Every structure is written in structure tokens, then in C-alpha cells.
Image (cartoon, rainbow, N blue to C red; front, side, top):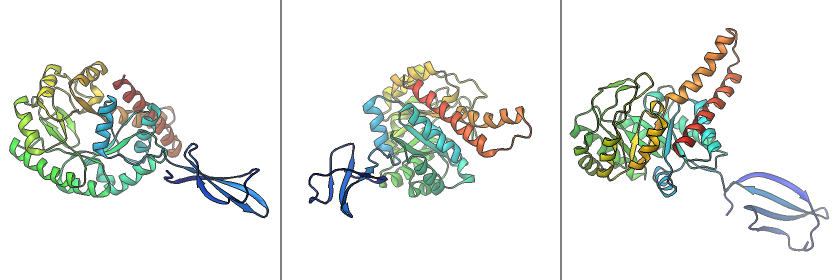
Length: 330
């Protein structure tokens, strides 16, 4: 099936049946061959098709793909063009699926339409499934704007609210998102550390006794849990695997772990046994990005080639993304 024209080349060749001019398709590397006669010479007009080109993948489809192939999905936080391109490049290097994600807070210097546009451009040559996820959606308006722009997965974070209010906010988001076939991640419990402008309490772990009721009432498709994981790199995480296992036996939906950057890989790999489908990484990639400019400045205070440093930063972030997705799926 011809999906899109990627490149056109002309080749002068000998043709035996020169009377059969016109267009026809051959099952040969997904190419369409068109035969023409021009000035007594015969040509084959080769249109290479983009059957492998990936669009932003629907969140439900991405989840099913990961479950069918026993993958864990990393969700890498972006802020700008460079980070977006780097994440897509890293996932393609590793040939493994995942998410590009951005939080409500980081949309302050952008907007959902711009991020969708950048993501589509970043995926122009992608051949692995990649979704676009809103991380820590803080308002119903943000969620609607992202869904309308083309995000394929949404998180509503009302975890700072009392239990019943959390449920009501998630239900409202689910109703809107499911109408457009977009899955919703919700959070039950709070993480220690600083996530954007919200500082959470240290001891607010997910209560297993609330899980079944929360998922049932909200209709969420993914559940982000607090089991000793933390946001950022300033506090050492103390992941409670027995608690995660307990939650996994109760939750009817896959689990999500935020704050992946500070968690040892052996813990993440063990957590895969407990229905953990998605793990978020932000600090590791941001550190790789920022340190590129920091090292250049320390080496030469007059270094000011933004384009060269940006290209280097993209490569450094892509290598980190490829490393992380490979390790958690090993």
C-alpha cells in the first residue's frame, strides 16, 4: 500500500513490453513503479513510499504494543525542540518504543500545538512506536488543549486533592479524553521532592486499600503510584517493592512510576514483575542537556556557538535516552 511519497528517482532502462505504459504496483520493497515513454526512450519512474514512517502513536495502541511485546515504556520529558528531537533519536537508536512527554509547567514557553508540530517533525524518519504524553496535567483546560492539539496520552494530576476530589477531577478528564480515544493516567498518593512548582509530602504513599475503588470510580487507564520513588535527584529514593507488589495485585490497570532518574536499574527491572508498564525520566536527560553547555562554558568562557552546542546536546541526550530504554528492557 502506498502511504506517502518520499523520494523520486529516474532510471533509464531497457523495456521489453513498451506498449504497456502507465502505472502499476509491485510488491517489491514497498515501491510503486510507473512506466513512461518520453521521446522514444522508456523510463521507470520509481516512487519510494514511506510505509515505515511513524505518526504519533495512539496511547492505547502503544500500551497494547508494549504489553504484547513485554516492553517497559520510558516516558522522557521534553521542554524544547532539541530535547524533542533527541528523545525521538534515542528511541530510534535503541529501536524500542516509548513516550515523548511534557508537563503543564513546561508548556509555559510553548503551547500544545507547537509541541505536536515538533514531535511530528521529530518522528518524520522514525520507525519505532512513540506516543506524545501530557505529564502532570494540572488543569482541565490544559488537558482539553493537549487532546485537541493531538496529544495521544494524558495524565491528570489531582493527587494533591482529597481522595473524593481527586476522583472527580480524574473522572472529568477521563470522560473528555475517552471520547477522543485517548488514555488517561491518574495519580494516587504523592511523591517526595519537587515536581515543577508542587512540593509533595514525604510520607504520602499510595494506600492499597484505595486503589480498586479509585480506578473503578475514575475509569483511568494507568495508575501512577507513590512507593518511595521521588522527583528529582536531590533526595535518595527508597522504593518499597513489597508495597508495589501489593498494589499490582489489586490494580486492574497497569502501573506507572515517576522519578525514574534516581532509581537503581535493578529496582526498575524487578518492578517489571509487578505490572509496571511506564516509567518517567526527566532529570537524567535534562542533566545531559544542560551539562553540554556548562562544560563548554567552563572550557572557554567565550564559547557562544549555540547551534554547535545544541547539536552536541541533542546527541548527548539521545545517547542517554537510548541507554535508559535499553537497560530497563534488558
